[in-house]
Amino acid sequence: MKNLFFVFALCLSVDSWAGVFKCTDATGHTNYQSSPCTVEHKAVQMNTKTGSSVDLNAQERQQAADADLKKQQSLQEQAEQQAKLDAIAKAKQDVKSQTELTQNLIKQNPMQFSAFAIPPYDPDKLPAQVKPFESRLADVEKFRRLAAQKALASGECQRIEADELTAKSKLDQLNFLINCSSGKTFLLSEAELTPP
Image (tube, rainbow, N blue to C red):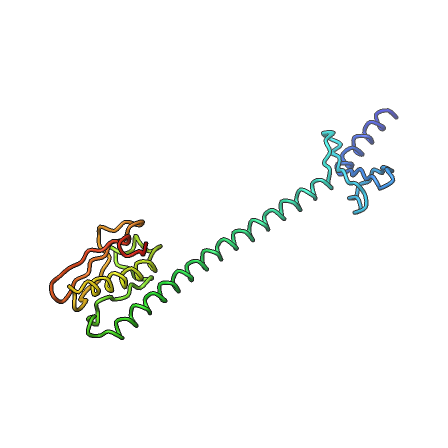
């Protein structure tokens, strides 16, 4: 009967030991307890049913490393997003600068340009023909101005009526069609407008 009682008591105590912690201090002294180890101890949680154990310190270190990695990834994503926004803002500013130069040229030379000869492209409302060249919009505006100036310098064009990007343009080779008041047209490529 005593043996049966001892076995029964042992079974009860095993169930109550489901959360056993093996704590080792800095001197190497090991202590088994039912509450979690303090910070200065090496903590291992033991499962008395399965015999397995979990190093809680390593688990905490891994969780901290995972949290740090997530934080770094989040910061990197934010930095990349900000860089994209900055690039878009800079591109819009470059387009604005080129447009202002062109509009000033038109205002200073009203005899050589009709009022709507080179209407500026709005980066937020690009025509379908210009949309594929959005990444080079500042270049488009600059070369439109240069194309008009080259047509006027030829002596065959007295006044620019229209200056547009053509459908023959490619991203690496822009082409422009200039219509003059005399009926003369010019088709000029980016290569022809780029100084050697």
